[in-house]
Length: 297
Image (tube, rainbow, N blue to C red):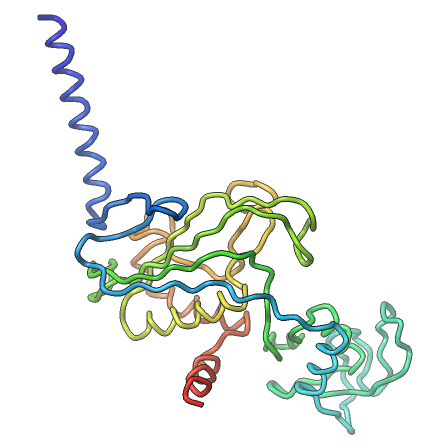
C-alpha cells in the first residue's frame, strides 16, 4: 500500500512538472526536436511552416592586399586640389601640409583626397593606411560611411530561415524564424589566435522577425551581412566570458519571443536600430537593389 501511494505521488509530481513545461512552450505553440543529420534542436510549428530556405557562407574572396588597396583608392577617392586648412581626421595635421602618419614606411606625399560617397577629406597616405588595415573597405573617419565592401571573419556555418503563422508580441502578422548553426574549427588569419581551435558555444541560436514588409527587408539585409561574414566573429563571449568562441558581431538579434531578458518583443525601436547597425557594417538597401539588377542581367 505504501509503495502504491509513493508511486502515485511521483506520478502527480511528474505530471505537474510536465504541465509547467508545456505552459512555458505554449507561447510559441512549438515543438523542439532534433533534425537528423543536423546539429542541435530546430524550431518548427507542425503544419504551419510556410517556406524554408538555407543561406550557406560563400568562399572567402581571394585578393592580394596590394591590388585590393589600389582598387579601393581608385574607386572611392578623388584628388582634392584645393584642400581646406583643417586637420586631417587621421593624423590631425593640416590638410594643407603633408601627412604625419609616422607608422607608414611610405614617405612620398600623395596629397589630399575626398571620399566619393560622403565627400569628407583626408590625406591620401592616411586613406592608404586605412585601406591596408581593412583590405576590402575604407570607413570614413568622420561619418563611418563604408566605402567598398566590408567583409568579416565569420567562420563557415549555416543560416536557416523559415516562416510560421504565430504573431510576435506587438505585430499582427506571421513570424520569420532564423536559425544559425556552426561547428567548432581552427582559427585562421584575421582571427584572434590563428592555428588555435575555436568552439561553437550555445548553438544553434535562433532569432525572430515579423513576417511583414519591413521584417522581410531586414531579413534580406541580414542575408547580405551573412554572405559577407559579418554577423558573427570569433573572440571572447560578453555573456559567458568564454574565450575563442563564436560570438555576435554588433548586429543585434531578437533571440527571445517575449521580452524576458531584454532580447524579445515588443520593442518598437528594434527594427530601426538593427537597420542602423547594418548600415554601420556597410549593408544598405542599395545592396538589395544591386542584387535585383544583377539577377535581371
